[in-house]
Length: 243
Image (cartoon, rainbow, N blue to C red; front, side):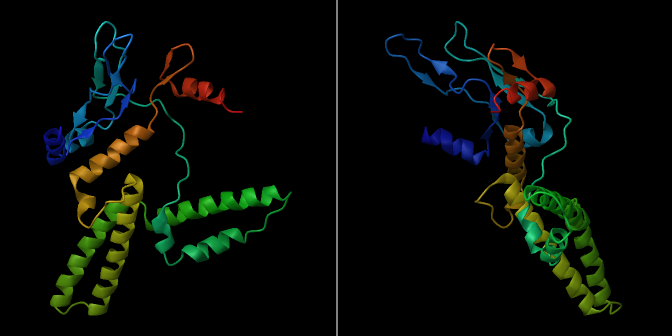
């Protein structure tokens, strides 16, 4: 078993997120019943990054000991709703963060005690989204462009056609963007083991993509055993459990 685990680790393989029973094998013995997770779909970073909408489902065993695994290369999630608001930690590193927060929070509101709080939080959400759009939208592209700009300025500095102060300012801006990108990727993947240099590896991005797959609900089964794959159907059955 250790040799197998070492092989999985060396090949940078990981379990594909799946839908279906937790256990995929049973001994089918009435007096001494056992159920285990013996069947897995292992994929590498090339698979994850090439088939972003792949989907794996384990079916009922039927007359067999093991569950049948079905893998779709492309199975879109039937969702057309806006993404929920998410706070990113790297926003706090922006020098204008507290100023923008204070400006948003001081906007006048009226109403019962709960209404001003609701409106302030709503205004704050818009403020933070604007901050992100202005400073960090497409953070990876911003880092690449800033690197190119720094290279051009460095050549100009060496040719004495540009000031060293300009180069140092751009270098500082690049460092801030790279730090923001690192915090963004770390929070997105929820990995505590992220180290310098890991953020650009294929394995890192494949883990991030796999996490997004796990958080995407593509199928629900209602109390009658019917599979629901349409967003409105899934939303309707989910609301039945809201107290």
